[in-house]
Length: 120
Image (cartoon, rainbow, N blue to C red; front, side, top):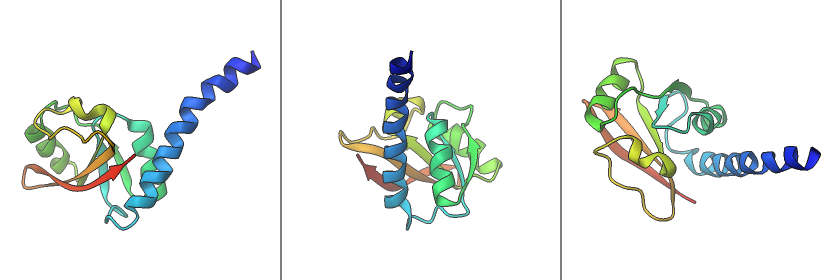
C-alpha cells in the first residue's frame, strides 16, 4: 500500500517542479496583482498564482479565443495562462512550440495577445 501511495505522488511532484520553474521565469512578467485565468490546468495555475501574488479566476466557458477574451475581460482577468498540454482547449491560439511549458497572454480589447513563453 505504501508503495502505491508514493508512486501516486510522483506525477504531483513533477507538476510542482514545473510550476516553481515557471514561477521563477515569470517573476518579472508583470503577473503580480493580475487577475489570471487558465485554459485547463487549474491546479498548476492556482499554485503559480500563489507563487507570483496574482489572483486566480478559473477557466472561461468558451472554447475559442475571441469568446474567451470577452468573457475574461468582463470579469476583470488581464492574464490568461495556457499550458502546452491544454493548448487545444481554446481554438484560435497559435500552437505551442515543442519545448514549451506554457504561454501567458494579455487580455484586452477583446483579444488575447501573447505576452510571454516559458520553456520546459
